[in-house]
Length: 85
Image (cartoon, rainbow, N blue to C red; front, side, top):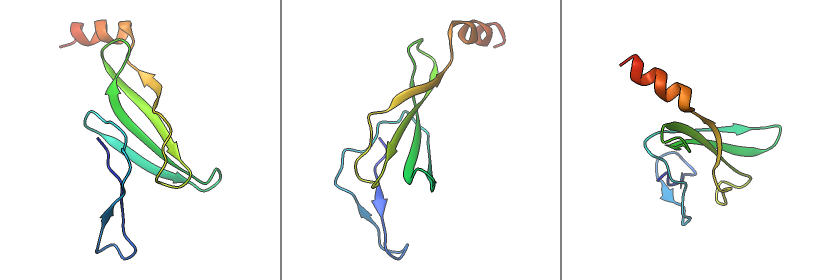
């Protein structure tokens, strides 16, 4: 789970009281100044059982969209991975 923290001075941090976004083990965050939104990608399982990247966005850093699947390993990736182990 990715929880969100804020700090006015980068010394004292406060965890926001929101549910966060589920992540298997990795996440990346950025800010898009054009759309004025925070962008969060998280690693979760895909529909084929392999690795997948999901996207969640927020305008205010407190309310996040439900993660949407944006990239995943397909059946061919799974087969090639087994062949090359």
